[in-house]
Length: 227
Image 1 (cartoon, rainbow, N blue to C red):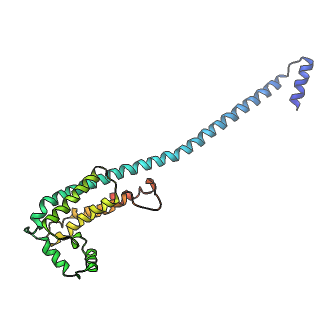
Image 2: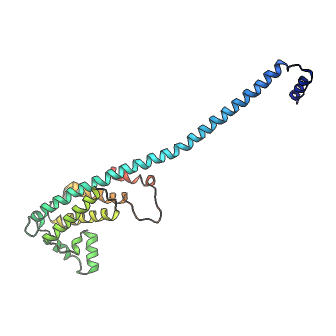
Image 3: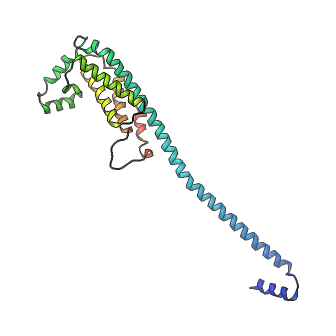
């Protein structure tokens, strides 16, 4: 109000405003400029904070994808070597004319359980193998090994399927179980592959009513690393 009165007097009298008036006007301009700069800085800081969360999420997402990519393909490669070795050596080790025929061991297992559907299920839960329902012949042993080799090659090439990983696990388990009559598959790396292969199933895209983001499933890769 006082400034307005002084300006009107200056116009009427033709006298310039007093120096302190100019200083006061300059101070007001400086205050407005400082306030604008403060507002701009606050906006920049706020925008920076908003950008941090997406970047962290993207990093977690990429880290999980890389870990899953490496784990699944490497396990597929190990499965491939395991089934390749089984194909070339199973006939000589546990075939019908091998060092320790697996059909004799499987016959002893079948004698412990009733020869019906329920008995086979109980036997499978006790000694997991598909040979409760398949004839244990040399040709079937080769077919199981070749099926595992083909599926593991698909996983190594990038197939991401929980069903295929589960099939690989049960095919490998089937061979290891019927080999218990001898000591050919009693080394530590056989059980290690079964444990790791079972955990790797959860790294694949599992069927679920609720879709989980990759960063929410990232902890699953640590279970495999813990082995």
